[in-house]
Length: 304
Image (cartoon, rainbow, N blue to C red):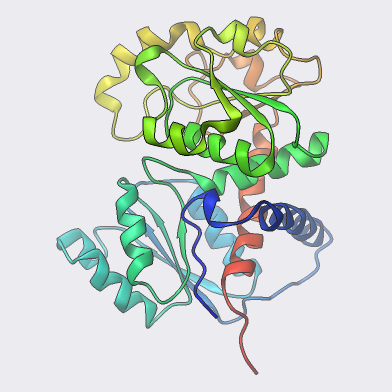
């Protein structure tokens, strides 16, 4: 059987993605009941982190433990990648020692090259262009709270960054409409908009973009690697803060999401992220369950 990778949401069909969401909800219920489910017993996940994380590391590591397997945390300080070993060589070596590779890095080309030379599944846990694992958790959270997201309208507020790109793909893959409220100079990448923008519309005015929508979501204004731009970005994005006035434009039962970590008082006001429409804690927790479903799907079972 051919090795399956998960580099973007485009790697899986709509049907498969929806089955993953359903399975994630099942696995969450099983975990809540205390049922032991060791589908990946004795399997090992290599976790390569060139970008730091809380939710990604804990969710993947805990997920592998709960599925009966194990994981190995690898940072640039711990590996030859940090000393210039080619990605292709690392892929070949790790493929002979582990059952899957998860990587959180900067350039998306790094993940693509890793998958090209790996003989085991490669999972994109974030690049500068895409964050597909977060979208699995986001869609699971919406389904749990409001049912199917198909036919709904979502507004992305803020930078046209990796999360925005993955929301564009999700809009097409899951069948919802996406409004993108962003400053002119911070639009999504043109090539991604061209390939995945069929269900998306850029509406620069955030009030208009949030009118009568089912979900509003955002992210920090300066992502990892952009810290030097924080002051300039804060000035540009100030009108794009998700606050009570912006939420009031949406439907009364609209949800608020944020991939976290959040900067209260910047991209989102404290009364919104801590308010009754916010589902950010369920969203964060669902990283565990969505990724367990993904790991179970990608990693071949042990043959007796």
